[in-house]
Image 1: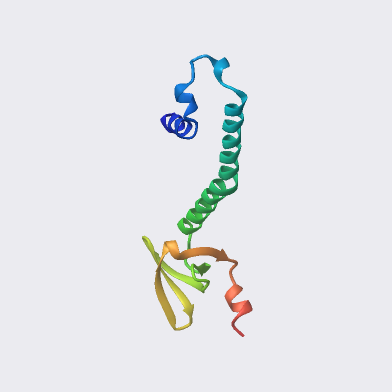
Image 2: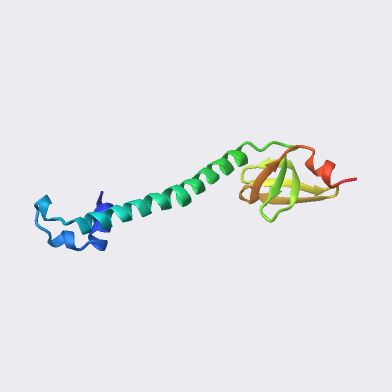
Length: 121
């Protein structure tokens, strides 16, 4: 509530000097307040909410990793999970190439068999 009052007084200083009567507020102030409210709702539903949904789904993906899952790393590299230890994951890029990455670098899980069916012949 304090944040809202600070926001209102910052952008609408006329409220600081207004009378306590509700009738003293003119329509311009209400329209401006309404426009800022619509703008905030737009920002919330088109920017903030989708980002939190994306972060939540990535957290679920990273927590449910298992050995043998095929994933896409942050830079677009396809890999297969070899083992998981706390926040670190050992992945295989090819038959003789293994690297250690953080769980935060995992961006997407792909269906099993994607690497062999599409790229290895």
